[in-house]
Image 1: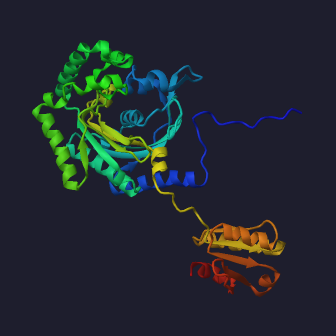
Image 2 (image 1 turned 90 degrees about the vertical axis):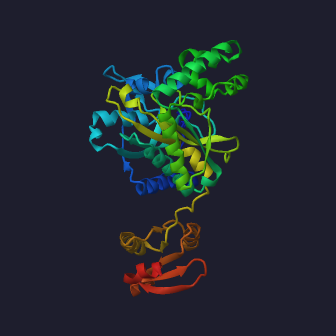
Image 3 (image 1 turned 45 degrees about the vertical axis):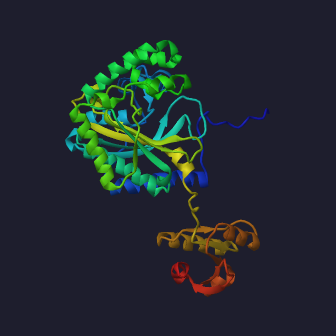
Length: 415
C-alpha cells in the first residue's frame, strides 16, 4: 500500500499551540476587558456575506475587491464572499437586523477575516482582527471615545509607549470635494512622472496617491496642496474638538496631513497608531469616520466611526504571557488509586482548582511529569493512602510532604 503524505495547511493559514496561542488570547482578553470598560456591546456577524456588501462598501476598484477577496458562487448561484474586514458586515447588520433603534450603538467584536494576498510576517490569508464601531453618532466626542478606547487597549497590552497616534482630518463633503479637485489638478500636471499605480489612481481616486509606496511619487506627493487649505469652518471646528478632547484626556498624537482614507464615504477623522516595534515602522491599529457607508449600502444617512487592528501583529509585540499551569497534579499508583483519583480530580475542578493527572509510566516518570507541568503540589495516591483515606501532598519546589485527608485536599492545595 502506497504511503499517504500527511495533509498540509492551506497557504497563508496557521495553527497555534502553547505560547503563540497564549499570546493570541492575551490580546483578545485585553480587548474584551477594555470593551467592557468603555461600554461597547459584544456583537457577532457572519463570516460570509453577499459579495455586494463588500463591493458596494469597499468600492469595486479597490485592490481588496478586485484582487484579494475570496468570492465564489454558492450552490444556489448567489455570489458570496468571506469577509475581508468587519465594518461592512456590521453596517449591513445595522440595517437588516433593525439595530438603528439602539443608536448611537457602540459595538465591538473580533474574529477571522480573509484576503488573498502574499503571506508575510504577521500577515496571513486567514487573519484575525479586533474591531470597534460607533454607529449613529455625529458628534466629535464619538471620535474621541474611539481613540481613547484604542489608546487604552495598546497601553493594557504594554505597547502604548511604542505606539504613536497619527491623526488627520478629511473634512466634510464640501472640503473633501474641493481638496480632491485640487489634488486631481496637481497630480495631472505631473502624470508623466507618476508611477503606473498612481496614474491609475489618478483616474479613479487621486486621494490614494497620497498613500503611494513608490519612491518616485514622493516628491510630487510632498508638493501636493494640503487639506487645511480647503477646510470649511465647520470641518475645522470638528477637528479642533477631536484634538482638544484627546489633549484633555492626555493622549499623545501627531498630525499626519497626508494620512487618507481613499473611499468617498470617509469624513473628518482618520487615524493610525504606528510603531517601529516590529522593525520597520508599521501600522498596528487604524480607522476613521465613515459617515457615508450606510448610505452606500442603501440605508439612511448614518454617521459612524470605527477602527480595526490585526491580532497577529499585536500578539507579536506583547511580552510572552505566563503559561497556564495546573494548581496540582494527581499521581495515582495502581488501578484502585486511579479510580479514586478520578473522583478527587472531578471534585477539585468543581471547586475551581486547576488539576491534572499523571497516569503514564512508573512513579519516577509520573513525578517528573508533575514537576514539568509547573504545578505547585502533587497529590500522591497508592494502596496505603486509600486505606487511610489520606493522600500524600508534596510541595514540588521544596520536596516537603504531608498526609492530608481526602475531604481536606482542596483546602491544602489552596493554602
